[in-house]
Length: 260
Image (cartoon, rainbow, N blue to C red):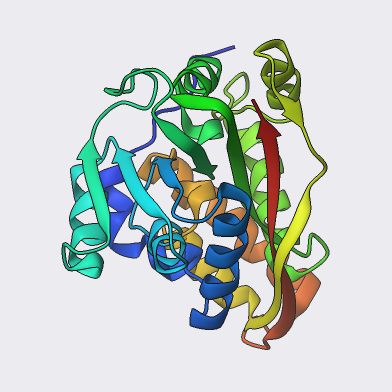
């Protein structure tokens, strides 16, 4: 196996909200759901706060939110959206948090553990800065795996295995729950915080990949991405015919809580 492929976060900061952003009403639902779990006026630390797409709705729902991210460009976007009023933002490494033990009511991680060099260290830090009785909240976006989005992303992974034998993307997966249990947390079942439907065509999915708006492409060099897209376009043309025809794709935001 080769080393985990590096992520160039600054390079995708400007396009991040295009692929990961939520409709305003959905963002509000997500913010309220997280704030309800964290508690009224809870002090929440978001790990990998990025552009603030989750932190800002959580703050609007009544929490005090601190955000840490390694990317200066991501934080620049977040500050521009925030206006300097709602969030406390810091540049730093989520594997070595610059906070004392037991400071926060909740720690929050959305689409970040699988991008960390050592996600186990992130979990240790996330639990360390929690007060006794605090909660670690994980969030993730779900899109119908049988939709054009799900199928094209699956085909991309299959193609990369062929193009890059022995390589692997960063990952965490089901082992996270086991690691949290070892740290003394009680992991609760996932809950769906929001459900919505959005149209997207195979051509749009391919364009997101080509422009690196899609997170699946962040780790790829230009040559590999170009080769993968050539194969994907040929496959999609065979499967879908009209690549510009949109599908209504069900999306969900899913939350899982681990209580200290």
